[in-house]
Amino acid sequence: MAEGDRKEIELYQRLDEVIHYLWDPIGVSHAPEARDEYYSYLPKLLDLLKRKAEVDEIADYLGWITRERMSLGIERNRDKEIAEILIRWKEHLIGYLRSS
Image (cartoon, rainbow, N blue to C red):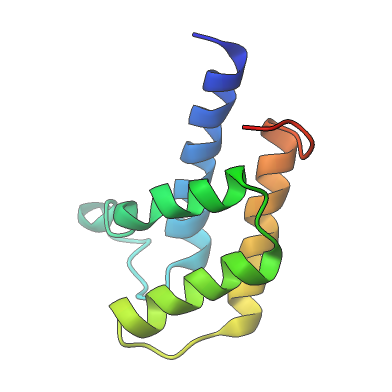
């Protein structure tokens, strides 16, 4: 497996952990049976990170999920904080300037 592929897989895993344990808008991070609750949102988030989306675009997507898919209120500050964490993980693992 190529180094880039390995780093992308690790990024996907970190993305999953951040979304499940830190973002967790429905409060299921304590429930092992709900570990897959946010899986369907990960591919789009990974795509946003790979194409170097800005914090606001990622936060907008997180807000859309909570509003449109979960019928919850948006917590913009938390969404931006999570977006910043995701971007930092991407920069750490893959690098900001490397095209994916």
